[in-house]
Length: 412
Image (cartoon, rainbow, N blue to C red):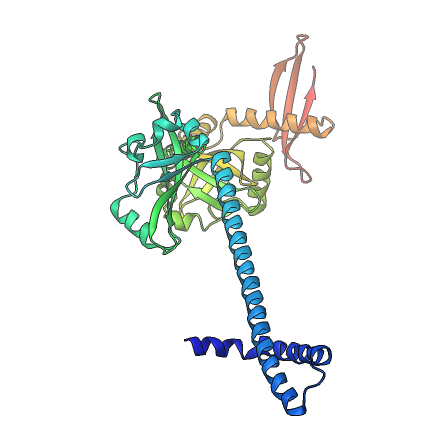
């Protein structure tokens, strides 16, 4: 070991520096102190002096290099320690000042560190929370991390567990919180503790409950209602939705009826259907009596109540449909019974008077002159004007140029 140590000092860059300095030192000594040496004495002396100086200088240079390396090691260690300290201070600031509740828990679920926000959310002081288990402040019937979930979390290097939970406040009230649980590990990767982040999500949970309630109300009012209902896209006429009553009435399943457009089931021309939809969209007219065609080909008279609803950036027509076929057929039968003879089936005087009134109204609107003729086909009726004058109204049949009877008014 000693020889090896000497060898380290007599080799390498430090020895080369020592040799150079040794030669320079020997020349100075010879000139000043040993001017009378013979040649062989000078060579022997120079060898000894150079070896001695080279060894000394090598030792000194290596000592300086070791000292410099040690100084560098100390500086690097100090830099690492400073970075660790700064990181810890940064984590502490984030932990204490975060806008969400943060806690560090042992692997069995007990709180060992909590921030101010978590204390404020739950109404406890820090001392009251420390040592408690998370099971002590959560509702029993809410989802908690089970054994399998925790096992998967502990086994996953970057895993996390998340759930909405009800937390029991100190005053006995409840708070909905969104829990995110992750694992803190030591330098060897072994689980050390849990990091729990709790965010107050009460407003979101309440809003989601309202949305679910509204969806359920709509489902009951639309899908489970026995009135026939359709939702039609105003721009395209596409049937977006149909309830069960509509499917039963038209004879299509839901997929088949929602693959159609409204003029596929409306027996009127498409142009008339579009015009009616535009009037309904502008709320100029909200009800129509129109013929609808069933899957079997049968035509039924329906009364449609339709109005615009704005949803998801588009306008849809929410339509409630009543089958009025029996009513319209009864009305037609009553009108025929009132205007035709029950024995012969021919038009009676009531129909004649009705047609005469229609003709008079049409003539007045068209500004046609009152005409008179002695045709044998003349039918007349007499009425009394407000002034008491008898006025005879005669209709002569239809002219070749007009579709309405030609009538004239004459006053005796």
